[in-house]
Length: 208
Image (cartoon, rainbow, N blue to C red; front, top):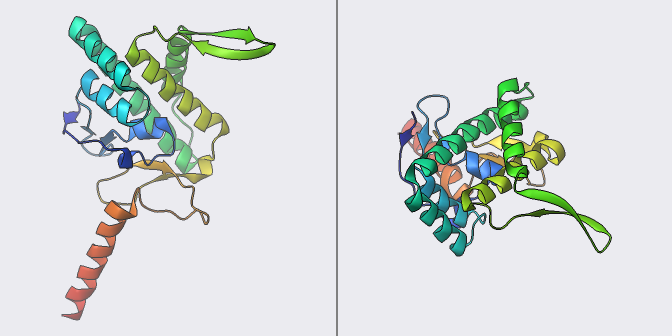
């Protein structure tokens, strides 16, 4: 079971360039002692609103869903957290050129099928479109957007630009959209600046 460590999410934390990467970034320290920054379905709802996956009404609807059936909400979050870990392993493999685990890809495909239950193909004015039911549970709609984003990244994205932050104990993943493709940090204002400070202190100590 992951340790929960509360985090006050802000729009500036959505640095992944893809909703699935931002979802993966709601946990950290994957290689040692994984830490969860959401805590449950309500924490997921708050994050999803900031991430642009739910609006205020959706967040209120999800909160009501949690209140109406706490056990079902807990099961949903456990399922979502399992997918989050699988996505992390898939993206980490893709970033390093390794082969993703078949079980992780199977889990993603199961979520695709789960999301598809609320969607259908329609022809409107001669154009084919996918329409998804707005009456679907709010948490399912948010997860559908995450699964869609993961699929789009894996099938159409620049996986050669998939990076993990080089900051200590960070590991946040992002798409490097810089011109030279050499971005190292999730944010220069946080991990990048901390790295500069450490280098400065090290040089100062060496001189002294």
